[in-house]
Image (cartoon, rainbow, N blue to C red; front, side, top):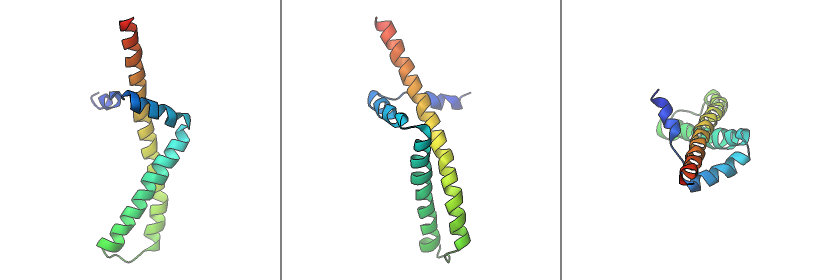
Length: 105
């Protein structure tokens, strides 16, 4: 499958070090902070701002409440996908690093 090749993008040493620090904090924390709060929160603010200031729609409470539910849940999914992609890249980096160390020895 060609799409799985996207998960084989190796990290560089600096990125791998940053990922080690991030992954030590845990998967759920990553999904909550990076996915639900940051990405989901941004989407809530951005889309509601578009509705209010660009489309000039009246502020609807149902739309806002729906946004408060949907985007954080979507953010959790986004965080999970990001975690899995970065973890796969990290594992690929580690395997390449081990392979290089074996061939140089």
